[in-house]
Length: 177
Image (cartoon, rainbow, N blue to C red; front, side, top):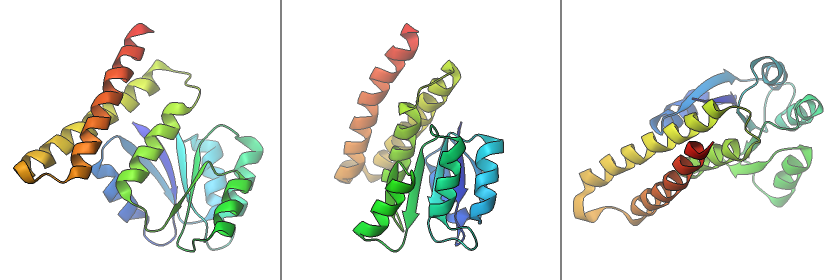
C-alpha cells in the first residue's frame, strides 16, 4: 500500500475516490498546510500531494517547511492557477513535480507510483506494494478493455501495454534480490 499525504482544501475525497479506483493507495488527509507539515513528520508518507492554495500556511510554504526536515519524500504540487511562474515557484520550493487542477487522474496515478518507485527503497516490502498496485491497475484496465470489446480506446490499450512491460521488469528485479 502506498501512503499518500493528501493536502487539499476543496474536495480531498474526490481525489481519494478516483485514485482508489486505481488501487494501492492509503490516504492521510488534511485541508491545512500547517497540519500537512506535522503529518509529513509524524506519519512519514511515501508521497505528498499538495495543493498550493490553502488557508493559513499555503502549499508553497508547507513544502519549504517539509523540505527542512525531509529531502527524500516526493512532493507533487497542484494548482488551478497554472502559469510558468506558479510551476517554477513550486519546483523551487522543493516539489518534485507539478500538476494543473483538475489533473488527468491516470497520469497523476502513474506519476505518484513512479516517484515512489524511484526513491531509494529501504525495504523489499515497499517494492512489492508498488508491484501489487500496478498489477491491480493492470487487472482493472483489462476488465475495462473487455467491456469495450473491439472498440477499446487507444489510451487504455497503450496503458495496458506499458504496465505489462513495467511489470515484466519489476517482477524480475524483485525476484533477483
